[in-house]
Image 1 (tube, rainbow over the protein chains, first blue to last red):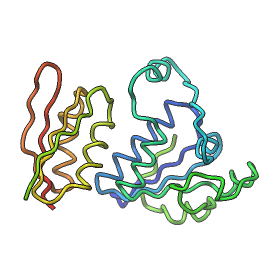
Image 2 (cartoon, rainbow over the protein chains, first blue to last red):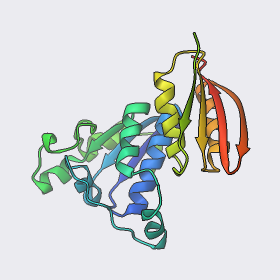
Image 3 (cartoon, each protein chain N blue to C red):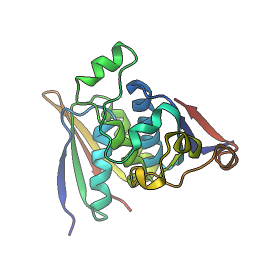
Length: 130
Length: 76
């Protein structure tokens, strides 16, 4: 297995999961790992251009976190791309279901990918799911 | 000529201070020193670990009334 390649699949829209995914992506990417993130399902709407909707907490920790100066998950994903060269791929199926084009998503996102291509490109890597 | 810059990340939680430091490291010149101020205790172990991993130089850590001062030198 290629331990220096991290593949992160994010499908949840809850604050805790988005936060943890963004932490793994950003810290992983700035520490010399090749990071590839696949965004789909409930995670997708947070990356529509101009979206600043807060993610709802799924448990007490999320509620606690919401009141503290915790770095915002969107900013951490952007750090992962800009400081660590991570690739954030929106899922093409989720885009079809939402009826949106690439231009409707935040510019720091990379090319849309289908699951088949993502699975092919991330063979033999560490896989994290949120 | 090398410079010394203070990066004030007090009040931010993990991995905020590390990301702030890295953002400034990218803009610094080789030989420059950066002093990170952090109230996040995890920074004390995370920052030296990151420095070692990417090949910069960790110059030391000290605590002053709840604030950690972590000094790093850009080595490449």
